[in-house]
Image (tube, rainbow, N blue to C red):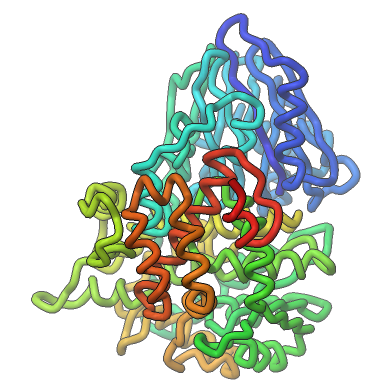
Length: 580
């Protein structure tokens, strides 16, 4: 896990050394263990390193096969790839070195990689620069075309800091953000900065993209015959992915909730580990939401895991929220950023890698909206996300243009009604909300996040299952629940899911009058809303719908101050919002 950045030059262009240094400084939190750079006539590359694999010789850039490489992420099948490339003269033990040789051997080499990655390769022999991002979009990568060529980085804020992109926000994308919670597609909230799509490999020459290949994260698989065979196959594929995701030269642990996804990972870690699993769970000081700590403790106790529980208080939230949102340069107004950030801050004291259950719902069909979409006619309901401000009469623009991105994902999805609903989320919700949240909150503390469910073999297996083994008897993730019932019944896999929640509405309601006036002063909030209605909205924040909308506007006000205006966000929420 690292930070990468650079530029693929137009002919004759160069990037000054001080701007390269600015890129390194802007990404230092992602890689506190060192940095490196490489400059050629084609490109300038920089990397900041979080050392996880090959601590001694794995510094980047890596060189071989007439090319230089920088990478962010992990290639989990590194040992197997090295065996297949036995004739290559490897210089390090780095998991990112095999892609140097695979890129030379096969044009579509991404299909051989199992891992999470954003990689840049400066290929001297072919006179091109290649940029690639893993098929699920676990690791981020952004582009900014400009007068010097095409710049790229792990985070938009690094491109802005180095003067490779302007600090110019797109109000339409921020409208989408507060309605939807995240932004869709290639365009970001910053004008001129784009996301590299999950699974894309771009080839650049003379500072322009000349070719693109796309790798689907879900490849055809063979369905097992019957539930018993499916359970055995699930056990094999999940044990394999967890074993791969535990490959590390540094200590690792698990974010453990009260749900079945992280409980399944816990059961397998306990089976595969020689030592005790280290697990971390968050809870809250507000009784308005379900507390998962006791359920997580029951699972942890059943396997003998070391279990650390933290409590997140209202005072902690007010004190640190500006800092948390400062990490979310590609904005995600998901209130789960709060526990994720605090868990990472706590976990870094004892581990450097954390496994997480992200992706379990999307891969094994856990959400109720999937089951609703899969009902037989005339009872099926199209999976349709509603806007947080629909019917509240707060926004200046009450139109539905903000829906275009998510509707496009729906229209492009293929398969059964259930599979289409899953694919829609895998295309947008997963990479542009859940995985950005995980990446930024963990990287803010120099912790690597790993997602065993987001593995090509797990996806191949899950999408080959008949719909009835994914969703049955009113339960999503049916087969996964049956597996957990066998191997960790203490997790109560068929108990009705309470849903993970954060008490932001209750916290905001207690400060509604004070907060409403401060949030309404934000220039971007004023541009998108009717400010007088904002104050009224905060006065009734105890109502669940109003509370969610208030949270989105609070996020927007803090985000715009830090990332739209480039102003500091030092201090607590109230002090930051009161500053002129």
